[in-house]
Length: 53
Image (cartoon, rainbow, N blue to C red):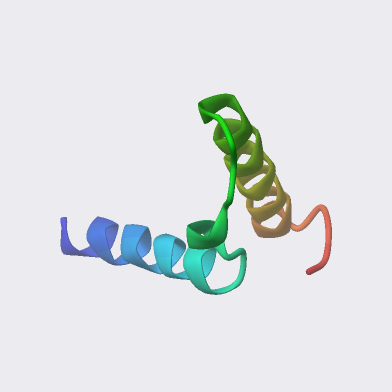
């Protein structure tokens, strides 16, 4: 359980620090969802090694 928590905390830290997930400024829920989807897609592609940062 500790290991899973560490992984989750690390991912959230990366999303906040490098992808500025806390700075999403959307005018609607769908706009927020679109921005978040884009960030998560970019993060996933980097983790999978399909693109470089």
